[in-house]
Length: 471
Ligand SMILES: [Zn+2]
Image (tube, rainbow, N blue to C red; front, side, top):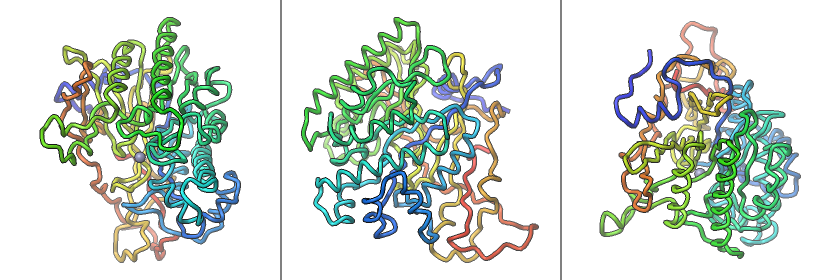
């Protein structure tokens, strides 16, 4: 039985993402993954080995390490968690058409940790190279989950060799990662201006792998962020404006051609809920912190509103939990939805998760999605767990997603809460209640009660259990 939407927001979400009525079978699926924040400094000492190893050989180096626990809450993704996630994505996306990666491949504080681990200064060639090498490794690792299929990678605020929110337009990091991003997206699918736009600012367009006439527009909205600063040279503001002009031209060209657009960007629209709730400003209006600089927020939201008729879908990450944002017109009617995907990194206390979407391959409209979460992260802890309930099923036994399976529409988003952005976006004040943190531990799977005797469980043999949290 389907849940009946109780509020206009839920109605809008259902309309935006689901076919809640007479449903035709979905004809395509894709994986949406974000905020891996891979930590190549765990275990201690490995970074010096990796720094002189080709990124293609990193997996072998990690495989040769002794068994180790997965990164826990409060930490970024280590190699154990990364490979577990890749395995889970591969299992759930076996019949998917492609994957989208929403950015933030690198761990937090990457530059400082790299400098310390390698014994080199921040900004040294060795530190820059390590950021590039790690990005290539993580992107390729995600690519192995969908061999031979497009994996479309956006950049996040941590994806840089200079620092957080400090990507250098036209810089070495973009030059070094460009071929990997192109190859993963599909050299035959990327737009003719890929080389120029990726090198200039890490944004590009790629033909939709299955939907005729559709274009996936991958933005680097870090350049538009309130927190962006070009600390390592180049003209960040000019690059940010050039990206907006490119977006406007790309949308206009798609409309003229009768095509449609999917947007992929790291930072969602609207208000930075965390910064706003932690603001020390005196007055309420001053405490509201938008994600993007006013100039770019207005332009971006304006374009999305103007072209809402051809924008079939929009995806972002950055917030590390399952969320959505709605764009409202002047009358308060939702005209566009931005789906925010949860993170793989558990650093902020959330369970690692990714999402599987079903979509109409004729129109490109998303129809349904499921969130796959790592249900037993605490059980993968190095600490003795005593009688703690363990995940009793190997990952392959976790319930797969079945396209078209009956499930209440929009439940994942409805539970996570949501927010809206008015189309007259300078004010950006009509936000719905702040999203709740999704850090609540998921219910533990049932322990064996009637099966064979359970072997002694150690950190090395606990099976990770990625499961559809909507089951
Ligand atoms: Zn992140």
